[in-house]
Image (cartoon, rainbow, N blue to C red; front, side, top):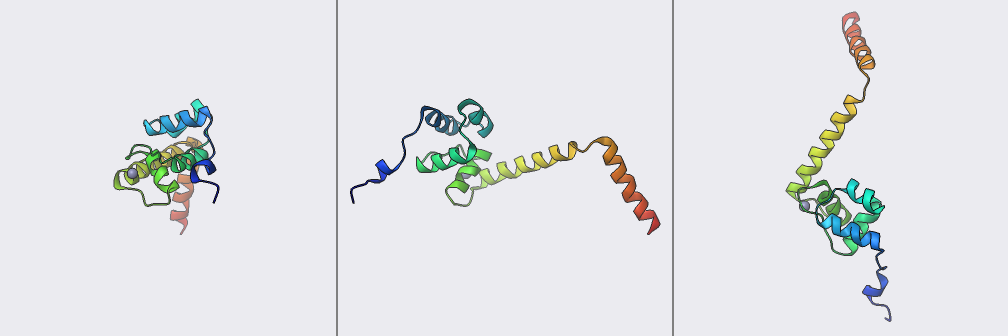
Length: 114
Ligand SMILES: [Zn+2]
């Protein structure tokens, strides 16, 4: 057994090291990617490998739990659920008003003819 777990772990680039520091300090995934070019997949994989975790009660914290293959804690689960609800609301807003009116009237027509 010549290899040790420490040497098996690839060295971090400066960008990755900064990304992990930002993650630990509570920066959002989006802000971290914008500053360091580290993709979320890599970020959480590296965080797991280096035993770094984002603050609990955040989406990033939730992703850290997932990357470690464990169930999220309560605050992280709440934060993630809130973010997903927000994303869904945003998605609804993207439907153009004209289309939304058409969908609504279509539904009404169906209700009347049946
Ligand atoms: Zn947590």
